[in-house]
Structure formats: structure tokens, C-alpha cells
Image (cartoon, rainbow, N blue to C red; front, top):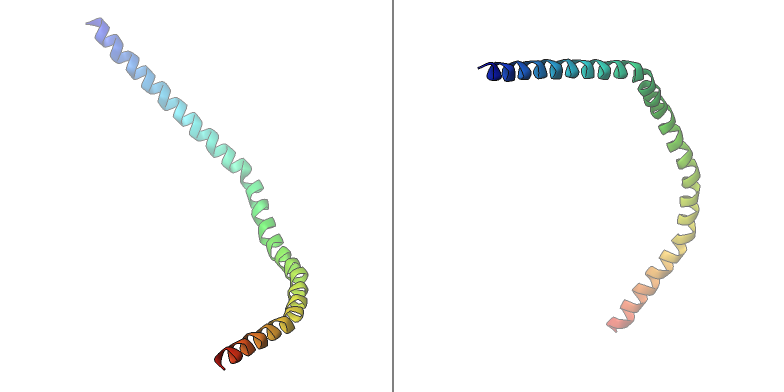
Amino acid sequence: MFGIAALFLLFAVAGGLFLALALVAGLVKLVFRVALLPVFLVGAVLKIVLLPLLLLVALLVVGPVLLVGGVLILPVLILGGLVWAGAHVLAAV
């Protein structure tokens, strides 16, 4: 009889300890979230500020390269089109 009561008491104590551990873990999690909030905010602000700046720099670097590449490739494309058209005209004759 006392063995069953002792078992129930053991389960009650274990449940209470588990509840206390869960509460302490939740409190630690909350403290870390509050303590690390400024770090996350600084990271977010840096992303908001630096991302458009980096995109602008990339546009200024890649833009002229694409423009020069387009100017250089345009005559080659026109010549290729003329060759293609001439080949089809000769093939039709």
C-alpha cells in the first residue's frame, strides 16, 4: 500500500521538478531574447542600409561592362543575321 503511495509521490515530485525546469528554461530563453535584441536590430539595420548600397555599386560596376559587351556584340549579331538570311535565300534558289 505504501509502495503505491510512494510511487505516486515520486511521480508528483518528478512532475514538479520538470515544471520547475521548464519554467527556468523559458525564463532563460526570454532573458537571452531580450539581451540579444539590440544585436539583431543592428544586423537588420545594417542589412537595410548596406543592401541598396551594394546593389548600386554592383550596378555601377556591371552596367558599363554590359553596355560595352552589347556594343561589341551587336555587329556580330547583325552579321550573323545577314549570313543566315543569305543562306536561306541561296537555299531557296
